[in-house]
Length: 274
Image (cartoon, rainbow, N blue to C red; front, side, top):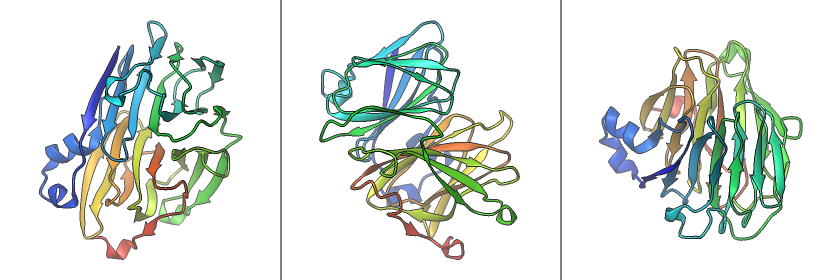
């Protein structure tokens, strides 16, 4: 079964006056994964779609999505798929791709319907595409790796860049994930904004009893949202994003917008946050 929620854009002025429930309603997708469902969030930030696909009782096929205005969801879009579950197959018209846990699959514009096989737990992200590029299966070994932070500042982490110019070509989608090392709990430090792109975080590998405190808002008007395992938070272009947790975790980041330059960010010093 396919279900879709639409998320409209929020300005910094509106966010400034929101209480906890309003912040969660406008920036958090906390029901992304449900057995035998394909749950999508259609955002009005750069028309990005994110969601979860959890086929347990049988394979699930994603094709027509009314909100996209096309016969099939990828007629004018590209998509990244991350498998968080057991080894499983994603099938498109040109063939089948077997994804291990931690593998990512890029599907180019015009890939047609896709069928998600049992056993997988798939996180999907899609942005509009202006031309057709070849689909590609990327493993963690294929990804570009970037080590940042230090253990003494509890932000020692490795960034795995999958859908990224150093690894492959895409139209506007940039996607990968970050793994925190033992004893580290801070991500994306120092915080930054990038006015030219939306970003979404999926937090995963987080124990049931733990939570991530995700920070957002303008640098001098920050807010936070408390997030559990396999929940998605949307970061508007005007918002900072960083987080701290009560236990070990990883997070999948996905961006879409004007360019694919991963380093196109405006850094915000910790001392300047309020």
